Image (cartoon, rainbow, N blue to C red):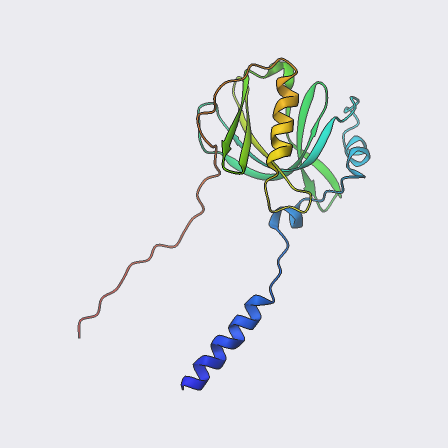
Amino acid sequence: MRHFYSSLLLSTTMLLSACNTTPYDKATIYYDRTQFPSQLVKDYPELTDPILQHGRCSLVVSTPGSNTGTYYFCTYALTSKGLYMQGWDPKALKYVEIAHVDLAALKDISLYTFLRTKQLQLTEERRQLALSASIDEGGYIDGAATENLFESIKRKGVPVVESQGMISPPAPPSPMIIPVVVPR
């Protein structure tokens, strides 16, 4: 019996150590840095301004003053007039808009920083967005790109306020564990 358990443990360890999963954001959102601007202009004919910055991101959309909201994996594109966040439609093979922010309509912006995590927070009249840029391969937050995006928007004259904390996605449902004690 001892031999069975040790072989079961060894085979489970070998199976799990061979797992190399693709980050979920990379698996669900198509992004090719070199082709992205031309693909986005093709999908958004109304986008006529040159794209200044772009990349992969995670986005939380909420109401002003809230610290939780709806979570999206996305790509972003910054132009001189606006910030576009879009998801990927694998059936139509094109980008679909999640949110568009007119920089002139922004009430304020802030940058939340905790260790290596950075989150750009944009507040409009009735909507608040929290964006964290990710590395091109997905899976990790790119703090430098997020900070660069913050500085670019700040240079447009948008008021900067202090962040009130991180805006997070809602907690996932988790199973409830109820211990059952059986007396002997």
